[in-house]
Figure 1 (cartoon, one colour):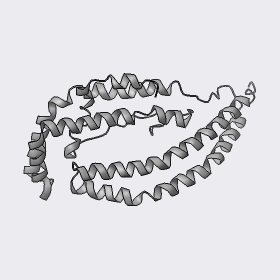
Figure 2: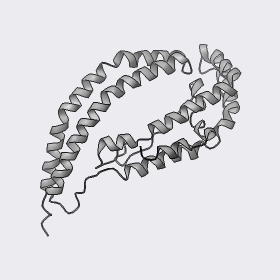
Figure 3: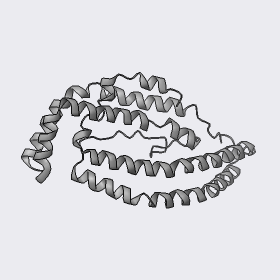
Figure 4: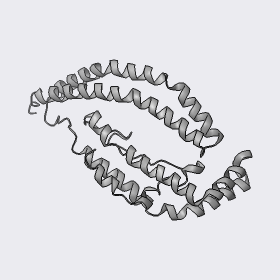
Length: 229
């Protein structure tokens, strides 16, 4: 990502803010919305958009948040785990969660600014990605180009779906570990294993769809101008 240097300059305190409660299973990941409402920008080279995604930046925030919570709130985390082990809806569990939030509050300083910096960096990167310009082009021609691109990407979609099915056991293991103890090392490790498996399926798919995108972009560029009405 072109602006990785800027990301490294984000203050450590701010980096720790977005998921300071992750070690106790209380984290909530920010999911910035893309132009299509599902986190994926429209009309942009998918490989480039993926490279620009803020996931790495946000992951850094979560990792720093876990370290912050574990370093400053170890007793509160242990107390919350003990209180919530039997009944996560009990008064004792709720009180322990609140005590942990209070302890972790200093680590939350700058959380919104840090997350916003990740999203702004991502948006600036995506703005530089190759994109399709269909303005003024014949709509029928553009539609044919899109159909060809979908057909081009279909085999890759089938392959990535089959590949991800092979990650099912790892996803189940992560789900079980995190349900038992969301803040445990076993949960963190199992989740990382599942994400690595899924990532290994996604990278080749993105390469294939990027090639199809390049064909789509060339096809649209070659379309005639729309007839004047």
